[in-house]
Image (cartoon, rainbow, N blue to C red; front, side, top):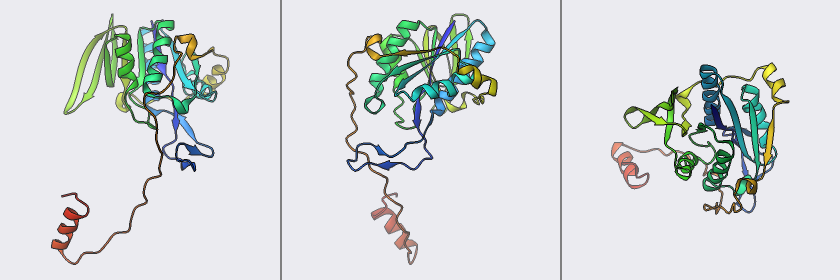
Amino acid sequence: MKILVTAKRVTDPNAKLVVNDDGNWIDDDVEYILNPFCENAIECALQLAETLGDVETVAVGIGDEEVQRFIRQGALARGVDRGIWVEAEEASLDSDAIARILVGIVRKEEPDLVLLGKQAVDGDSNQVAQLLAEMLGWPQATFASKVVIEGSEAIVTREVDGGLETLAIGLPCVVSADLRLNEPRYASLAGIMKAKKKEMDELQPDELGVDDLAPKVSVLAIREPMGRSAGVSVADVDELIHKLSSQARVI
């Protein structure tokens, strides 16, 4: 069995970002982390490999050269067998382009299961897993909080409005991981050392049949959020209700 899992880097949500003068990208050094949902997907792949045995795990990252570090440190050092880096300009990639690149990788690698984070915490689009499944014509289960492989099926418990839903979907399939799926492990020192020698394939999009990476979604402008304004005092409850309804428009 082969499991393909994503390792996407994202801007650190706790970092202070500065918008450039043109208002279209971020200035200065940007701090990155491995997407937390991808960490859950990686941990799921490792747990399935430990449970099933005879499983090859492959981590894929798409973007600039620095992405290789996140594949090695975030996936290979944790125990994933090998990595794939697809070189592309991250600033211009949208969900459709990423999904089309992943389609090319899936057709090249022929995995039985593709695990992705349910969304990236920078763009928060929550689109790639669904687009990938549709392009491949594969069954999918999103927002997974539990994944079990039984024979030729994946039994997936997923979070829905009002509770949990359990699906049995045939392999091969696409599954996206929620935060409650597991608690990602830390990379051991031995794992970090081994990761340096693990195989890392380097590919270009055109090698995967993707010649046009023109985005279907473009960022028109980036603005820093408005600062919080000072509070105001009110004389009585009637004035408070009036301000909440006429100015704040929350009631």
